[in-house]
Length: 379
Image (tube, rainbow, N blue to C red):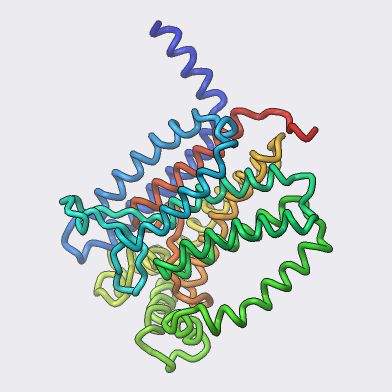
């Protein structure tokens, strides 16, 4: 029996995309090293321990999820969609409001559980959304150009985004859902004669969204990019980040030697601005290495999507690679002062147990889809 199990495990490893896991682990090693430096002034190893625990659980989750055939659960997509909506709305009863004014977290301590951990439904919901919208695209695969199909997909996306934003007011997470959907819509094979007018309509909708839906502090975060004196308190996060990035120059101040990082001037230095910490202490060279590794990760998933031989697996891979790409670009833009500070973390690098675990689960999904290639039913 043991021999049979070892043989099965050996066959599993041959099919498993260990290269994808290796890239993620490399990112996690960089993350742990950077978090250790960023939290040195806190006088505790709690953050590094929690991150390490999340990485270990994430690796286990990668193997567990890759062993699941997602296609067998495809018919349950509508139930997953309803669950996701309710999960996001649960923040109204269970959520805790953070320093930024967002109600994005369910803190276990606030629920009477003496564990200093939290769950971010918006992060977990991204994977559920990618699964449900991919299946919805697959069901409508031969009639994407019809108005009824566009209305269905639009309602699917907007209702999920509304559930994410209406309680949490987390603009960054809500925006990532929209951008993931746009990337998947582009990759779905829809005619450009329809896709481009839809994009134009989306751009036109920014005016009423700005006027009626965005909170005042969200508008301020965007406006201070152009004039920091509108609200210097909100602008200083981006200014301090740019100072840290530029101060590192080519090779940085040295590990645990960054002035902005170690003297508590750089805000959110272990979460949103971890890349600024890396650039200050490791310089341009360190920043470029991080960008290259993350680029390899995104390219690898897009490559897996290109090699998929069924529409559902293809769209799942596109959605997951789009999720990583959106977060990477927005977070780097925040750190470099060219994007508003909207609280999106750098995948695998920033501190955050929910985020890390979600990312590893996402890679497990990609791995599982690649291990079970099957002809598209449409063919």
